[in-house]
Image 1 (tube, helix red, strand yellow):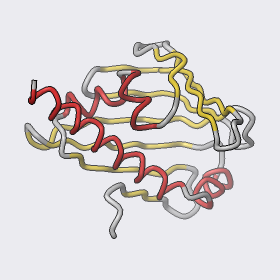
Image 2 (cartoon, rainbow, N blue to C red; image 1 turned 60 degrees about the vertical axis):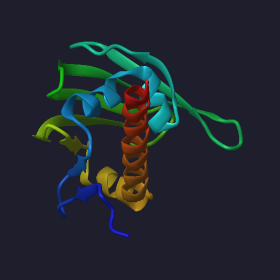
Image 3 (cartoon, one colour; image 1 turned 45 degrees about the vertical axis):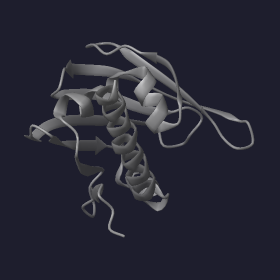
Length: 160
């Protein structure tokens, strides 16, 4: 089955681009990235902090099957509702270092939207290490969950 989330990485560059079209209105796609309760559902992580503003910060934590906790954090550099989030991303205790993420949210139709993520790594070798992981498969699965969770929320609200 073809992945709906596309990951494009040019040889020799320390960046990659991730794109995904969703069957969700723009406002709901954006909400999935900024509402802690929704983030927790589709990312399968605990939101410890999520300050959705310029110079805000965020901190998430996940627990692996062995019970080990893994932290993720960053700083939000720009925040324009329903348009843009620019933030850093760092996995604690991992050799990958900090990456810079540019998230652009775009309306396609009143019922569909697109996410474009431009991710910049410290070096080409770190970017290539990330691509050796099941990264593309993982982000596609996460985006599939996002689509499912938010669609169910809207269907639940309509049923009320």
